[in-house]
Image (cartoon, rainbow, N blue to C red):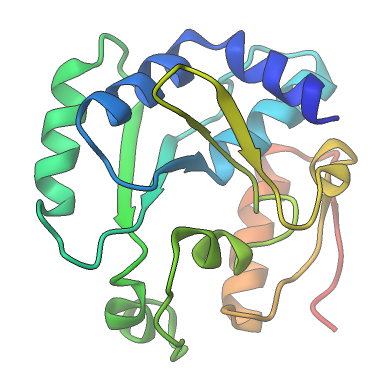
Length: 184
């Protein structure tokens, strides 16, 4: 499945261009992850256009020092892109500061970018990065089976039942053929 995912990612010029722009901007420890990757898989399974119903590219990175703000990175990366897919950049070193207000749940601070991805739904806990030589690496702590099987289940690490229901309803509205596991 990993090989298949790498081929899918490489077939989407917007994803590769975005990863190259992240690397060029010096975005530390980054992954393009979450929804865009899962939705790319789902669209492939369903035989529809790769970026159909993809709202944005989630880009996560980790920088305790905060040499540049998320906004500075976003501006720099956006200026390098020829496509119009929105990018959403989040420094995982700061998630614990805003998460309780936005999501209603207190979380511990992360020590690395992967901890943020680990807290996502298993079907969405998938990211890729490009190293300096352009080699693509996948990070998928729960494997790729849930994504390829279009199966959504809760991850209670950093999620409330209310947010899970809202999120999974949004996915089900856009991809009716997915299976959503109940919270309990």
